[in-house]
Length: 83
Image 1 (cartoon, one colour):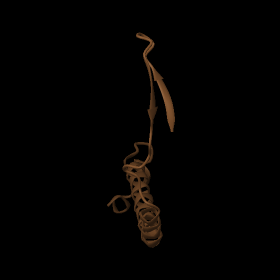
Image 2 (cartoon, rainbow, N blue to C red):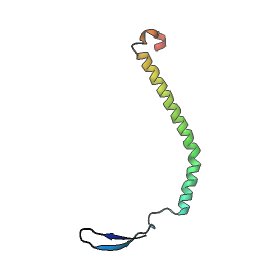
Image 3 (cartoon, one colour):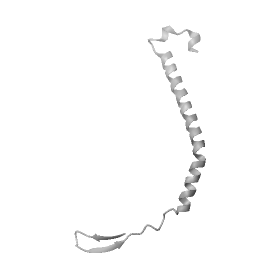
Image 4 (cartoon, one colour):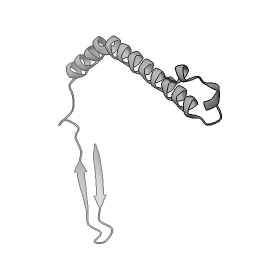
């Protein structure tokens, strides 16, 4: 890509050529990354499901604990139910 750059203060301008050759992934590298991503997709989905289940359980336990500590409901639970 060719562009012209101009310094507004001095009025000096210069033509610049910009190339995208350095630091880019080749087509083979991109295909390799996509293939690896597809291989790990099922593992990632299984891990995601496990984490979501764990978070759901933690949220449920937190709400039960808070219900047991709630002053309005404290009298409605027996000591066996609280432990």
